[in-house]
Image (cartoon, rainbow, N blue to C red; front, side):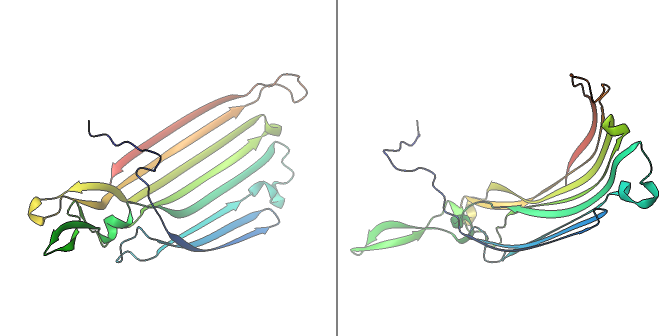
Length: 220
């Protein structure tokens, strides 16, 4: 049936090497204004030689407007904030053979062994990881001592270099290549409202939550 049996060994074992350099910075001014910065550089053994190191940055900012002096005396406002963020990250693709190629032992020739390229995999010198880039904006507000809360988010997420193994014409001698040509985009809006009608002194807890989400996905 074409299945493979393991007699104590490991099948489909993959070996990945990675190196990364990262830095982070966070600033908080009187719990009103918060900013976070992150930067990371990744090198992966599965990256093709033309792909090099991958650089990813992230930044987020938050304004807790309920802590402003002109809103401090509003007894019905428990908390409130506005959020903005941007960030990217990566997911490794394929393996080192799909990036650099693979050689296998061939038949003997003139009483000497031969080494041949594995024609099942065409090396992709530009093979790179899938990269997700996300933009997000939102706000949160709590009212009447936590009895009511509202949250809203809108986001845009783009995924680039999505991995697939693609068959190629046999005129190339090789049969497949690891491709990262596909991109897609997810975007949408999400709204959530929560009510806690019972008193904080009640022995029972009751929370009513409603959610509305509008999500879209398209090929980029």
